[in-house]
Length: 352
Image (cartoon, rainbow, N blue to C red):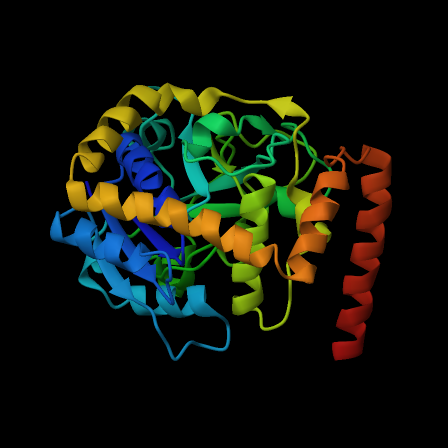
């Protein structure tokens, strides 16, 4: 059985080897990775990994679709043989780590628990900064264990998911959060399940990118999402975001919605022995080891360069002052959702 992870990266070589080793431990057999506009050697690391037979690397230098760099990559992915021949597909980001709780923690165990599944939604569990200020070269999954509560009522982004789907022709193209281009002749037979093992309603077959609020979605599997890292890393990420989104600088809004440190979840450590062994094998390659060290130095140097600019220095100061996110009570969340529903209704009336 071929299980494919599709990844899009830019300037993330310092985290790439851990991500790859972890997902091999989970049970992914194949990796298709797109890179664009890298200054830290990510593209060179991917070239080396491809030469070693670890993955397939494609450069995604543009021109890019108006819907973004990641959409362009996934559009290209649909035509690749490695995608066409996969049995299961999951598009991911480098800050997302699959964490399976059932059985031995492998994809095989998850599929055994949900044998009828066409698609399985892996809902984010947001991991905050754990109040770390300085970037350190150590495994993300080990350094950051503080996270959001199991049951969340707000924000809706906390319930977003990525879709692990069976590549049986029901969906003909991968998408960022869910597969695209459904085959109408196969949709009726499709079965969607969430990370709790519950069958999902038919609307998930063609839309929806977030799980229902106010309940656990993690009994069988979750997607550990580490969108922030330490405060230094967030400043570097803000610079990358600014490049992708023109003059938009990631600020406290993004940080506040994702800096969850109320709970503690070390469950992903079940993979540590296997991940460490795979990571050690990769680092035995002198070229890979050197590329990793270069990427680490680049991140530290880039942070210092950014701190000479007032917008990034101000952002770092705000991060130092900001408190972690706190859960929104159920009643307050219902109040917010009520306005969101009203807004949607008014927009629909305007369009009609």
